[in-house]
View (cartoon, rainbow, N blue to C red):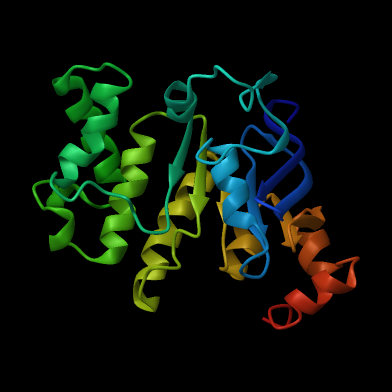
Length: 246
């Protein structure tokens, strides 16, 4: 593909004396769906938060089209409009309707007119099946519906890359499928995605690249066929042993 969007180089992150990430290296190409897998506490969400500049890396570089966005003086809001994020806990504004949630960032950050923002928001709310709920407040809709709104809100910013931080882990089991199907459709359309997930079937079947993390380091990475089908490290084999028979 040869079109590198993000390069993570020697990224480390410590909280006090506790090193959460150590010497992380990987690349995201245009159209990649990269799944980051690993046990809870292995640093996956912290990595995503560093990439979105919600956490400041202790050392290393995050290159967005060759520019190190981890350096001082970078406009984080402008960068985040290109590298959007969907959170585990939705992070919707409870005092706004579904439609207003999807318009706010466009008006505030992208400086779009309300009419333009509304039209664009509607396009994506229709895409995720939430157009009938535009006047609802977040408390009036289900968890799966909230997450679909959160995805529409992120898409309405026209990001180049979308980061998903365990987007299904706060959902009831029957709602997981509706969110994964939206994500699968985005992948098929060529959206560049970086997904921290415990959904191994998604990682195996939808990803183009899989990164397995263990205790703050990348233990193994490669295609789903390589990582799931022929893991090289014992830690990877142990982690995947319960999924590989599926």
